[in-house]
Image (cartoon, rainbow, N blue to C red; front, side, top):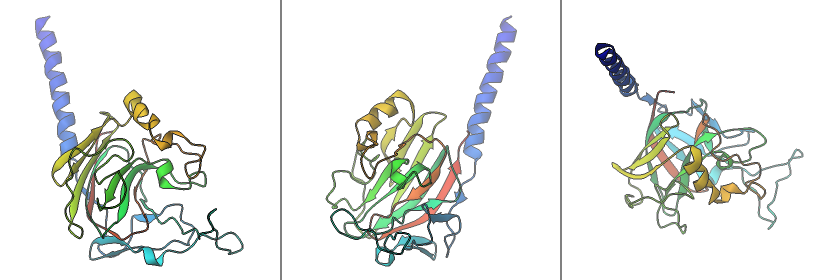
Length: 253
């Protein structure tokens, strides 16, 4: 009897070690070509979106070339205050992802605000990526916003400001793992945020944010954080931002 129990223990240990080894042996996959946007597209692309380009392995956004939103007759749409509505030029991956580690480097200009999102869904129902996708903040920390770089936007602030001066490259390694219910951000080599990605703790965090109210613009029809499988996204927030060395390692499902 004792021998049988020991055999079962050895088998369980072997399977556990095999699973860990399998995760570790998953390869990093480069998500960015040197000179084109292959593998990426504009969110809910209507053929009227511009701004992102790739040159020498650097993905960048130029806010000066974005177009304005138009109705079916070609008239430019306006906000309630009379200002013109610019296209939302967020860029998303062609492929969907669930459990992964993502590494990328980023830099910003003065007062730039941007972000990375996961679990993003497209469709007429969802006007913006942020109504479905949680965000890790990317920004110049001099930007007038209490949410700083490295934050899980609206929910958890970074434990430390790890940003480098404007114009210098920063790095994120982000883990999103629904299997182990774990997410974190390693910011320039230091973990600054960790969080659950599902369950009661996650729901409690969301309940304290603006994403809990799906009745007001621009968050109507939001299903924030509801999708375990979805696109990954880089945000257009109307300012220049740059990315390079974007690579992903998919984890065990």
